[in-house]
Amino acid sequence: MEKFKDLHLLEGRLIGNINLMEIGRVTVELDLEEDDPGVADFSDLMLQAEVWIRTFNAEILQKLLTAIAVELTDAAYSGSDYKPVSSDYASLEQSLELNKICFYQDAVVSLIFESITEYPDMEIYCLLGESFLIDDLTVEHK
Image (tube, rainbow, N blue to C red):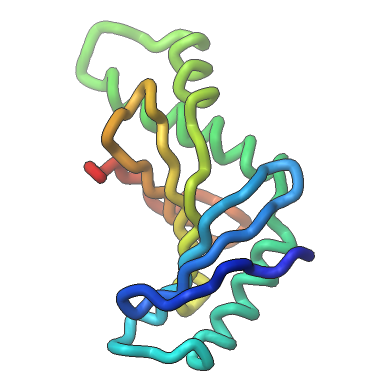
């Protein structure tokens, strides 16, 4: 497995990037949610992140993209008479780009996506639970 590259501390978080097979380069952020940690303080969290990344692959990402597109599209049209069709889901799914993976203690992982065409100036936060299931999905301004 390729290791994290360009690691540096920024505002108490360890930031870097990794090249994931079949996915591409992704920013990684490790956050102990503590005041003023040193690089050495991140060793346990970095090991957890490496284990998680070894199991994450393009197939899992594709399933997440599909689930995110369905959930956000259905939410966007809830309360209206319009019923989304497959092209509505596909449009969002194809526009989603994984920008960052955030790792927190207690095996909490959040993926941050962008969709320039469907959600300009916004980020889509996907909190994952066990087995890569979506625990929470939010859309926030950058």
